[in-house]
Length: 358
Image (cartoon, rainbow, N blue to C red; front, side, top):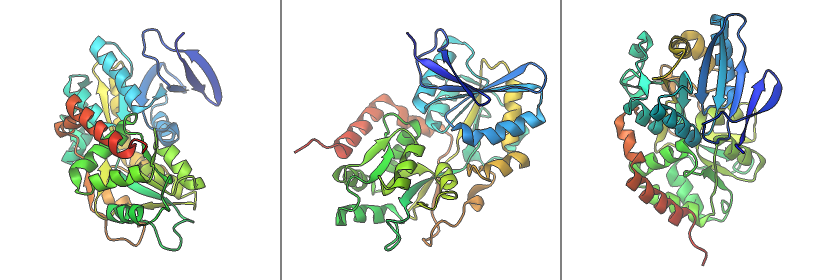
């Protein structure tokens, strides 16, 4: 029997069977009915619905004749599904939005997308778009999250150097560091791979993770939950959008943009080749970068946009100005997906982070 999917309709939760021929996946489908008309826009994404709901609401206010079906899934599962749809030349969604941008570039380079054909592309920096088919929608730093109470006296680590020193000098962080499971999380793997190419600290960092029994999780929200309640004291490489949004409401959470360098990711969207409502998908992308959309993304959700850039980031600590390093949407990202390189990288991660018992 196939795994059930979840359908959220309004406030009701209904279990439905997986669609015939679709890979089994832990995904949820939320439908926002149109005020009138029968056009449907299907969005497939890894973004938590709470972060997308305001944008969907604004879209439907501008387009009352379009209903929206929002499919939420994990990055690797979504990539498998949309890759199969592309290979089979079948419809799955009108718009795909993911923080796992290496996978997004691979799909676009593989001919799975159509040209967006929107003037808003001209407003984006070069690093936040690719071939006129992939558009960066957000500006999300990879941050360090910390438990505010535990670091009230001495302050949190402000850089990777500080974190490495802290892991070496005391047992305070033993069993109390959380980060992504990079084998399960596309964005977690992307951040880890970028770390390995950006700085000389990578080897020492993962050695420290292993020595301190780092805990790994699929999602930013799980890491943040553990830091908030004290099960973890540090969350590493957490998406800043989720962290900042939570920290503004929860004083238990502190956020640091590492001063040695801070990776910045643009969550990217493309219109699949087999899209049925390509015009509606284009309108949704245009809304996201319009003044109304930017007000939403720069506001409570803290997703920000590439048009807002670092100017929209709050002053998080008294540390030095962070060295922000946006990750370009380009074929260079495909290096991280090479099977041999990925296998070697994950092998190094396992040996360092989960060393064999003595």
